Length: 191
Length: 432
Image (cartoon, rainbow over all chains, first blue to last red; front, side):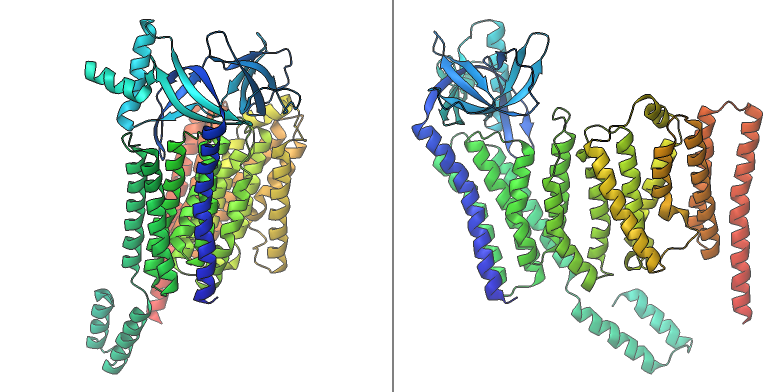
């Protein structure tokens, strides 16, 4: 094959290599710009990923749903219809295996974590359970939150999630009314 | 030309084995050969350098600089990608050397990975690790062919194995089958085919002769939910497949250390046979009925059909030494697997006999070829077999002891006899 042809194919490949990540960005930006905002009560812990750096994993309060239907496969895709409770936090309105066209509520695509037969609870794995942080701060963040939770000073830790047509983007994690990044910086300064 | 050959030539001229004229010819030959081979060391360092720089960039970006704005972070996500693409484009357009292509390709490979991962970071996209790897692989596959890059092909094989292992073996994700592994494997095979065709004896080809069977061996288990009875059968057949591929002259005519198929196939088969010469598997089979409608069963069937196909073809080409049981060990095992259900003693006896026969045949092949490695491998099989049987049989200690002593003596005797025979042969050669 001539170098010219190879080069043309390469240009196509290079374009795809740029388009795929760009598309990822655009999809996310669209949800952030036009999606509805929900606050999910959460509790962070600290693992890491070898390539993508440090993140804090988020455990959500609204991560289980009582249902008598026991036929759920692990990792099965499900749709979580959301509502807002009296304190302004997100709660689960309904869980369904299919999109419900008649229901006028926001929903996010998630996965089945597991179903517990003994109490009829379906546990849900949300697609926004990771919040990436600067490596030095991820562990501090976990410690800060844990300490405060133990002292029960802190019960407004929540994640801000934008939701649109099943897609969801985690914007930030808020502790005591400020972004977790600022909160950790302040905690480190205080100590 | 290396100094060993130079000093050898000098010695040969001094001893009047070859004339000065032939010495110059030989030297000229090696000189011309050297001009034609690209600087291998340079390629290796070029690739290693790009690899380290690429990984370094991923790590630096993984720090996740909080103080940068989203736009700045995004800019830095794309920067290495674009730089890599410019390098690669330049290498293609200007017909740069293979070294340049390998190095720039390797750099671009990691730049693609860092771009995707940084964007996942900026937007908190959790996406599981395996889907991230899959996107990365698919975006870089064409580069293997556009650059004819071996380094990229090796990275592809390593990362596709990583992908499949991550998806199939992660302890909570029960039952996710890495089907895309098959696609990734198929995508790299044409490159391997070209290597086999044009560079059969090159070092790079033998790297793939090891990497590919190793990858398949690692990944096969990811295709099953649990390693029960059919899981065992599946691996026995896989090792049979590798062994029979390794015996195709294309591979078999090469040195053993270049033939990963044969080595992995032979050792794997023996490992599985020894494993199944204990009674746990057969007791398990008797207790539970086999689940025929399972992924393991279908994969076993597919592997079995392919392996039998290769065996029949090898037979028609007369590549198979009829007495060498290792070729059909998988077949015999499969038959035993399906008949020995209501009684564990029949299959156990047969498996033990099969191991013994393979060991004896190996010893015979070793002796015929004067190959101490093969001979002792055969003896080792018997030794392992005996040791294993000592765990699950009630023999008196005296008999066990005598057996061990007898077998140890056998080891010495076999090696001694062969050494003696070899010396005699050499002696005859000298007399002539």
